[in-house]
Amino acid sequence: MIVHDILQGSEEWHAVKCGKASASEFDSILAKGKGKQRATYMRRIIAERLTGKPVETYRNAHMDRGTEQEPLARLAYEARTDNLVARVGFIQHDTLLAGCSPDGLIGADGGAEIKSVISTVQVETMMRGVYPPEHVAQVQGNLWLAKRDWWDFVSYSQDMPAHLRVYIHRVHRDEKYITALEAEIRRFLDDVDEAVYQLQLPVRLAA
Image 1 (cartoon, rainbow, N blue to C red):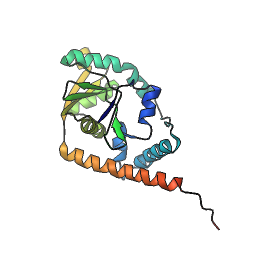
Image 2 (tube, rainbow, N blue to C red):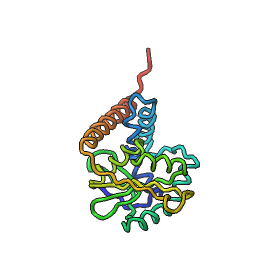
Image 3 (cartoon, rainbow, N blue to C red):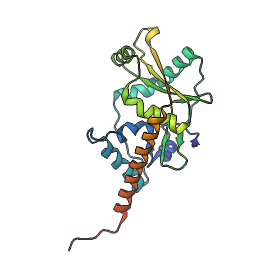
Image 4 (tube, helix red, strand yellow):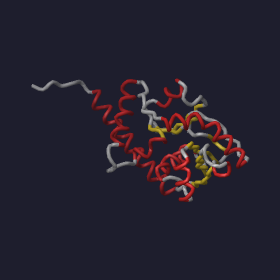
């Protein structure tokens, strides 16, 4: 793996990620038959490869709140677990144009994915007693790319009572899932390569 020690959200970070499949979108890559998520994300990566410029993505109030509250969530997690969360910018696969931007690495074996959520989402997650299925691909992708053994999924809700603000679910590597995930990422990147190649061929005007 290639570790880019840069600030997440910076221009350098956006430049390093440009044209690469990111773990935060692995769920979209796996979304065959579930709408247009895979195709939409593929067009974005293709455009970034062709232009060399990051494509602006949609943001909403929930995303902005998550970004603003992430430092508080990290501190709350560290206080609860005594784990020190080390920041890292982008971890890139040795050979594939794919990578992840972890919320933090822990020691030599672990990592953390931190989500700041509204109270109703926190209640739902805690009642399930697991972590949301839409984050499985991202977390297992982080484990694969960062070569870690475990990852703490951390759900933080500032509006909840103090003892319920932090929910932690430890996730271990699922080698069968990771093998299937890697195969799908490779297939996705092959499709991107082919599309980029075809689009760069000289335009032939119809007779």
